Structure formats: structure tokens, C-alpha cells
Image (cartoon, rainbow, N blue to C red; front, side, top):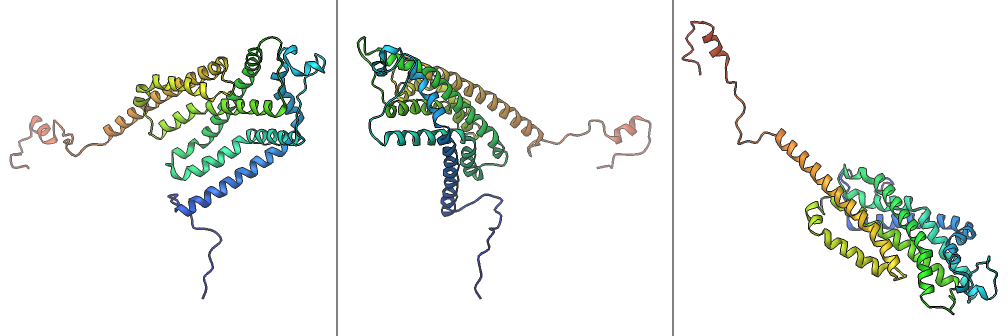
Length: 303
């Protein structure tokens, strides 16, 4: 008699999985992420004109005489050009996919976190909502800062060429530059969250962070100098200073969390009575109280 495999797997409360099961789960999660980003890309495709207008604004704030469009456009006009026939389609596809990934980030971040969750303790699984919301807010803050600094960084880069020059920025190179700035700033703001998560799972305690605090700040400035696509000092400082503030906030969180954890551990140890400590004895037992009350009974033979 042939036994058919059940459609529903038996529940596994401990969350233990084989390597093959982990790979299958990862494949399933990545497929869900691809579907979510694809649906978001459809929305980005439909809203492409509005997105392009927002992404183009920092370029339009460059002085008019330094834009190549000044040769054949009025001062009010601000248009980007492309050379190859497929550039228009590829840049629209790129903007749509990136916009879809950003708009749907809470949903696919949850999928990634759900893949890691089976390996965590029960109380650690409660951080799912906080992780997703915090990572989304930090990424949005990083992109907002990048967008604010884009106009100034572009102006610094373009004007550094000197008078008598004009920037010939086509849409492919410009949009790629803007997207790279937004993504790098957003991802860099996730570093403090990573420090907090490592502290919560007891991998990175406050003692290690305190010893390496100065080195961490130095590495932040090195990362900002290398990661910023514009490579100008203004953009580097604009990225490094907020990252330092967020890193210090993460260190402060680690200090408070470790102190709270130490106090709770001391309270639990005090509640448990060790084996080498004698139990409490009544200093004035009942027999002695009867002797003091005038009772003539002989208690010398009592154990």
C-alpha cells in the first residue's frame, strides 16, 4: 500500500529545519519579495511622470547658464535628454522598480524578518513590528536627507568646472546618480538599527561599544567618504554627521538596555535561594515562649 504525503506538514514548535528546508523557505520568501516589488513597480510605472518631476528638481535648481539646456531652452524650461533609443524605456523601468521597492519596503522587510524569526527566542520574535517600522522610518529619513542635499551637491560639482562650462547631463547618468544617492543614504541610516539589534540578541554589549566608540565614529566618516557618489566634502559631512548622532543614540540604547538586563538578572538571582545558604530559623521558637510563660513541662528531652 502506497502512503501519500500529507498536504499539511506537522507543526514544528521549536522551529528546527534542515538545510534543504531552509533553502526552500528562502526561495519561497524571495519569490514573495519579487512579487511584492513587482506590484510596486507597476504603481511606479503608472506614476513615472510625477516621479521624474520630483527627481529632476535638484537638477533644475542648478544656475541656468550652467545647464546644457540653456542653449535651446528658455529659463523656465528644465529638460533632460537621452541619446540611445532604448534609454527612455530603461530609465523608466529603473525608476519604476526602485520606486516600487521603496513603496513596498514594509512588506518585503517583513518577509525577510519572517525568514530569520524561527531562529530567535520567543520574546525576540515580538520585535518584528518594531523592526519593520523603524527600518522603514530610518530609510525614509536617509532618502529625505539625500534629496535635500542633492541640489547643493550638484551645484558644487557643476560649478567646480569653472566659468564658461555647461553640464551635459543626460537622463541616464543623472537618474542613476540620484537613485544611487537616495539608496546609499537610506541604507546608511540602517546601521544604528543593526547595532541595536545586535545588542538585543547579546552579540554586541555596551562594553564593546564603549571601547570602540571613537573607532566607530572614525569608520563612519571613512564610510561616508567612500560611499557618497558625489565624493564632495559637503555630501560626505551631510551623511556622516547624522550617522554619528544615530550611532550615539544606539550606544545609549545599549547602555540602558544592558543596565536594565543586569538589574533584572540580579533580581532573579536574589529570588532564587542557593544551596549553600542556610534557611531562615525562627530566633524565638514556640518551646522557649512556653518556658517564659511559666509552663512547668520538662522540654529537655525535646529534639
